[in-house]
Image (cartoon, rainbow over all chains, first blue to last red; front, side):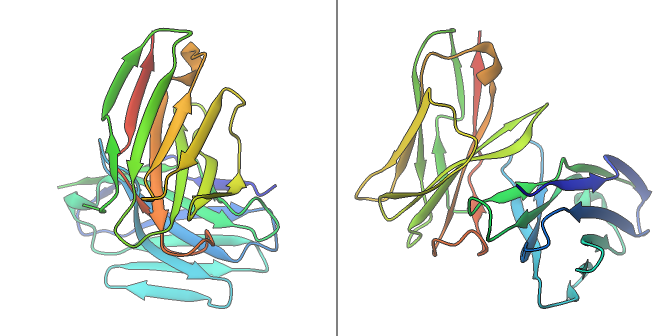
Length: 113
Length: 114
């Protein structure tokens, strides 16, 4: 099945700086890549997603890029704010799999005021 | 608030026991997914129901079962509980049956097996 690797596991940035989280996937048939933000005591919240027919997608301070050839995708957060502090998960969906989300292991982002 | 409701929020039970976790999807969502989140395994897909029928099955143990009722709420039953079953259990819902569509997660049920 699909295997998603996520790096780094922890990331600390100064407020206002950018943060980048990277993921790789193994199944070249995977075609949907969402990113989730999980705050303490809450469930994962979808923040942005990208499909395999698109190379980049942006939503205000958040952007995601996808490189299908290299099988990796990245989350970029610009002008970080303390409220961006959370655990971020990438995920991939493979149509050849069991129709489920394969999650990365998460990145704990801390934005230092 | 995602609109997905899970009860209870916390559950403490002994090994060997059986528990039921409940999930109410967002209004209008027909698809319900169950996930387990543990420190060593991360977020793992367990099972999906769509409009009352099982649609996909992931890493769900035989001791676990689920169902979706006519009113679309879902229950996850965990039996013969072991210490290793201690985890956060999340329910998510979406309108369509395909997983490559926006899914909304509930706040989870924290299960502690002692």
